[in-house]
Each structure stands twice: as structure tokens, then as C-alpha cells.
Length: 505
Image 1 (cartoon, helix red, strand yellow):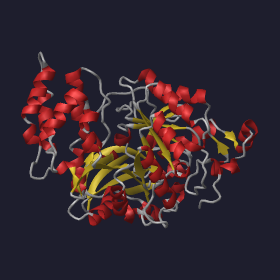
Image 2 (image 1 turned 30 degrees about the vertical axis):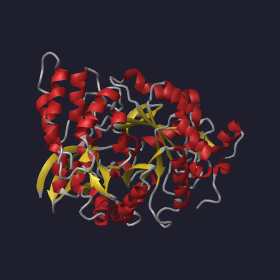
Image 3 (image 1 turned 60 degrees about the horizontal axis):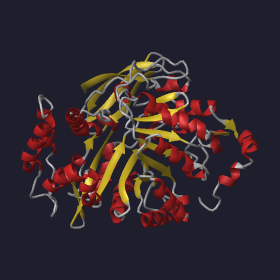
Image 4 (image 1 turned 180 degrees about the horizontal axis):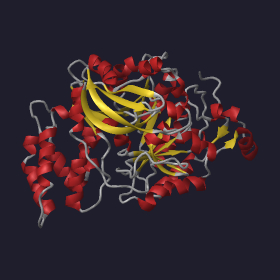
């Protein structure tokens, strides 16, 4: 075993007993994998897989950066002792939970109204206050919000929520949905388009009815969204032994629907809520790592897609630093921990996927940015733009680039017409593939959470994703700000059972 680093974690058994107990943890390399070792004085030692490819881990960690302190982001709630002093990343994306009602019974979710026994559904005024939280303090406004549930399409006032988000300055709005409403109502899809929704995040757990019982609805939803020209990102939750083996087929499905599907966001299973109660053997069997996710994709697209084509989130941060320096306008920084997630971009060339990183010389571009960040003096923006243009040829591997790809033209059009216009043709031939590697109490790493860039806006404040779910704050907040099903039904005149789609299994 070889030590890799030290961090702070929590004892999972103490947590199950209702106490958050910080413990020292060590990351070690063993059998070419990265493991977390930690010891609780009461419950003994724990060893949990942290990352199952040492080479990829080391490659990703070279991109580690540290953002600015964000005192406004909560590091603990409900009188718990903070796990760390100050958060080090601002939100790239905020999640807004608008209801925990659902039109399906989900036995794996303990926070939906059916299983919890209470309804969380803030009023429009309360949601407005939540949306304004980030806007009142963030040094750079968070422009991206994802509206989630439950099933958000159950809210009759959903379009009012979207309208207010736009009014408050959120320029990128996503809706996460199971897609049933979209499959049955093209006009509803058109209303989303007319309201300026950027992306539908579609729950999509597989390409067979065994792994995805909603597949027929999803195909119909894609037809309707295609008609209104609204982008879709497929969101598979991968569970070991259940659907992880279909990750390659999911990519194939997305490429076959490239005219409407713009990306895939894989979410490996994490163990919180009800999932905390499974035994160690089942947890280890169901846990999906990056390598388990990517291996079926590599087999499906032999030689065309590889684990080495993926780069961690902070890869983009040097570019944003350069933009901030040359434009003198603050940018939303990509300062997540490298192990939080990674992505790649596929370009369709002759009917086959080609990772953009294979014809864009990433390392040369990063070195250019590193060298030019040091520059100072007058006319800095023009001097850097000139240097960038002069070095364009070194940024491209010409023999691997797709026919017609002209970086010089893209740069010219970006300068004159803006990046959206310049990338119009390129974007319609590309597929984003990404993953977020969320944490739970078994593999929780304070160094990673401290850099979280996906946050929940809640009545208790702004909370990093893995604290919100991993430490059970989601359930505490929902209980505090909810009402019983009976009270909700009396207040609204509705019946929760009417939400349930009895014709959908």
C-alpha cells in the first residue's frame, strides 16, 4: 500500500446512529486503485473504494485548483459542528426543489411524498426568495438553475416559476423530469420552448424495458421535443448489477438521436436515505465507479471512445482565469475537485464518434493559457488575442480533425458574431458525455466537498450537493418545511392519490 494523501471524513456507523463524527482519513493506493481508510474510536476501521484507476486518478489530480472562500455557503446546519471552515467554490449550477410530489411510486426514494408522508411544495413567494438567495451575495451571479422534484411538471404554476427565474437573471434553466407529461402533450413541450427553457434533463436509466420501464414514454417525449427543437440531456442513474452494463448502449442511443439529444449525464449510485440501510456486500456490489461506467462504453465503441478522452471539471478553469484577466469581467469559476466529475465531447465524423480532445491539442492550449496568464501591461486583451491567433495551428491535430473544421473561422466569427453563432454547426454534430461522482458517508472526502460547485438553494441556506444528500440535510429540511399529506389535501382541495399514474408501472 502507498499513501496518496490525508483528508477528513465521517464515521458511517456513527451517522446511522444519528451523530456526525469527523474522523481522520487516509487515501492510499493498493492494487492500482485508490482507497479511503478511516478509523472511528467506537466503531473501528473502514476501507472504501475511492477511485478504481490510479493512472486516471493521477492524471485528473494534475488539474486541481482552489477557488475563493464563499462564507455564505453553509458547511453545516441544525447546530451540527461544521465539517470544514469555509467553502472554496461558488455555484456553477443551483438546484431548486419545487415539490416532492411524484406521479410514480419510487421505492428507492425516501423523500417523495408517497413514502415520507408529507408534502414539500413552497409557494411562489417562497420560491422567489430562494431564487434570489444566490443573486444577493455571489461575486459572480450563478446563471444556471435546475428545477427539480419529485416531478416538477405536477405543479400547475411551473411556468410562473420559470418566468420568475428568468426575471431574476437566470439565463440557463433546466427542467429535470421523468418525461411522461412531455410524451403526452406536445403543446406542453412547446410552452417550455417558448418560455426559454434551455435543456430538458430526462430521467433515462437504460435502453431496454427491463432497465427503463418508461422507455416507450421517453421515445415519444423525444419525438415531441424534436418537433419543438428543445435540447435534451439523458440522465441515467447507474446501479451496479442493475443497469451499469448498459452505459455503452445508452451512448449509442444518444448518438442515434443526436438531432435532439445534446448530452448524457451519468450519475453513479450513491448511498443515502433508504439506500444507507443496505449491507456492506450489497453496497460494494451496487456502487459504480468511473471505470465501471466507462468500460461498457469502451467495449461498445472500441478504439473510438476511451477513458483517456475524459477530463475533470477544473480543466476549464485556466481558460476562465484568462478570460477574467483579459476582459476584466468576473467569471463563474470551475473550481470543483477533480474527482467530482469528468466529461468529454464527441464529434460525429463519418457516422462515428470522435472525441474532440483527439484533434484539439489540450495540453498545448493549457500551456498557452498558463504562459499568457503571466502577462501584464497595456492592450493586454489585443496582445493575447494576437498570440492566440498566431498559435492556432499548434492547437489542432490536422490529420485527426473532421473535414471542414476550421478553427480560424470559428475564432473570427466568435469575435464578430459571438460564440453561439460561431459554434452553431459544430454544436449540432457533438454529444456531451459527462458524469458526476457524488459522495456518501462511506467515501466522503472533505477536500472534495469543500470544492463542490453544484448547490441546493433551500430555506436554510445554500448547501453543497453532497452535504445536502450525504449528511441527510435533505430529509431534515423537507420535514421542517413540509405539511402532512392530510393538511396539504385540506389546504389545496386536491388528493395526492390523483397524482399517481396508475397506467404506468
